[in-house]
Amino acid sequence: MNAWLPDLVYVDGRFESDRAVVCDDGKVLQVIEGNQAANAVRLKNRALLPGLVNAHSHAFQRVIRGRTERRSQNTTDSFWTWREQMYDAANRLEPEDIYAVSRMAFLEMALTGITAVGEFHYIHHARDGSTYSDPNLLSREVIRAARDVGIRIALLRVAYARAGFEKEADPRQTRFIETSPETYLKHLEQLLAAPELKDGLAWAGVAPHSVRAVPLDYLKAIVAFANERALPVHMHVAEQPAEVSACIEEYGRSPVALLDTEGLLSNRFTAVHAIHVTPKAIAAMSRAGASVCACPTTERNLGDGVVPVDAYFNAGVPVALGTDSQIQIDLLEDARELEYHLRLQQTARNVLAPQDDASSSALARRLFDCATVNGAKSIGFQAPADFFTVDLDDPSIAGASQDDLLANIVFSLSRTAVRDVVVAGKQIVENGRHRDQEAIIDHFTHR
Ligand SMILES: [Zn+2]
Image 1 (tube, helix red, strand yellow):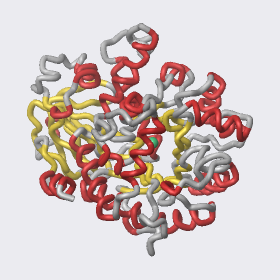
Image 2 (cartoon, protein in one colour):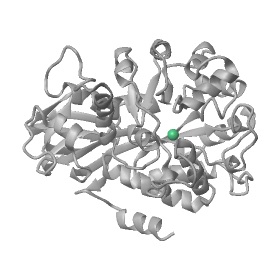
Image 3 (cartoon, protein in one colour):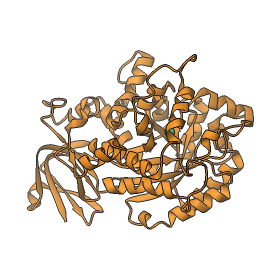
Image 4 (cartoon, protein in one colour):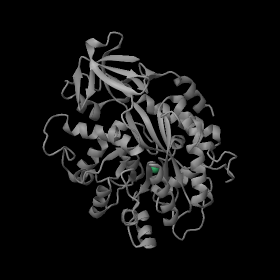
């Protein structure tokens, strides 16, 4: 049994003093009176908060950070020109590279207080398009990277069938493609049986890439499988207007309308981005109990648009957060951007603050829930024994009162203020350093 005694503990939406957290066999996290924790590790000048959940990540995209922020020739840059550059990188990576870059991305996540990640993984095949002797080799390299860093991972195994409606096959997508649902499901079943998915630190989900990449029959087959096994289902939905218009052309319905009328939405379904949507689509997601995963740092980097989080909140749709392209890994930055993008759009303030609560932490609490409980629901796990601490003397939050500490953390915390990170009762970051930090960075930078 491990116990920790910080100055403040975040419990039920507020900070309390004289509380210790106790972790029993890595599973149960209990908060007890500080004076009852005789052998607790004292975390002086620290506040303790539940671990952050990053619900949408493509770890390998960490390799193109800083390399796409320049003008392409003879064109207006957009999501689609960025995608060309991303494909170039995706097609160069060997299995050991996938491991190295994933471990680098997960290290950075751990250092910022992220304790679980939903990895939307779509590179399956070798560089020449052939299937590896273990068709899940690359998925397992990503899982190995997360386990070595020590964070939890939902490997959301991506189904990718085609370039798009009435589109020629794109040779740069061959590493992603499994043309039939039978092949995809056979490989997924093999992954589900892998030994590293048996201890609660790693599990798998179903991720049809998008309505563009997966035709309806295929989509129905794999969502039915996910529903049978109660697996999380994640899908890119309405990230770009072109995706919505192509879907209307093919099916006469928008992506969300298609998912709704075909009965594919559920409370295990997460629509990633879900930016270009109608009030009717938002109502459909609400009825189904589906979640949205916003990735505002990436969405602003790619010029995708603004997630209408105010409308989702009003409809009771939980919004999770993802670091997506890894242009910056800072889930609290994503949390504050949910609000800031709406402020710019509406020339208003406190847009997402609840109507009936004027306290200084009410808005921060809502945004913090997006980075924690909503993410956990989205990737399919509950109440883990994971937490992180922040240094109360860090310049970015120094002087905060107990009542406004959460607003300080959500709106102003520097990532370097994160001091300790514990996953399943095991400390992976101590005093702002990961146990394998040098080795992981060295392996990544010298490849
Ligand atoms: Zn994505």
